[in-house]
Length: 205
Image: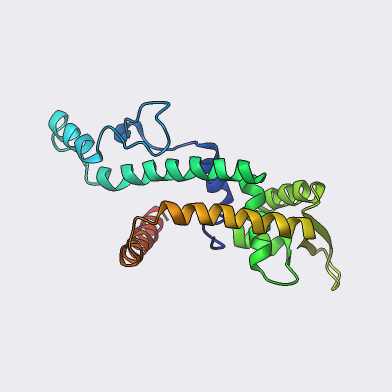
């Protein structure tokens, strides 16, 4: 999990973990409520695009076969990750916090400012997450030796054990979910997703 990925945006991860979707009704996946996890969508994205062209000729539908599958996959991955996290006894926000500390390497300590930078969440959100994790015995915090107002957050032994178990559960499960792609296909998809993400961000700025 990269620093600016699923812990990339804790806000985005929170939305994903709760199953909320921002998908427009105009490109609805038309998946019936209560469909079993992993069930194939009953209405292909190509058919959605074709229906709009039939009913409203000239409607800009070139995005539908890209965006609709992305929304569907995001929902599937988010719901599955939420189940894995529940079983592991950790929530998405705590996973982000412990992950960024674990990836920092020994002594698994970062300032609250650096945690906010790496997880792309506000200082207030970091403070709340740290307080919850500290109450649970997963992290400790204290002033930096250099003085000033810098606050350092460190993994405890209990927090280290929890993130080790959680990372194995989450990444092991998600590796299994994408195992249907060959290494070459994964590399191609990674490149295309990175290109699309970069371009969309530029167009939104």
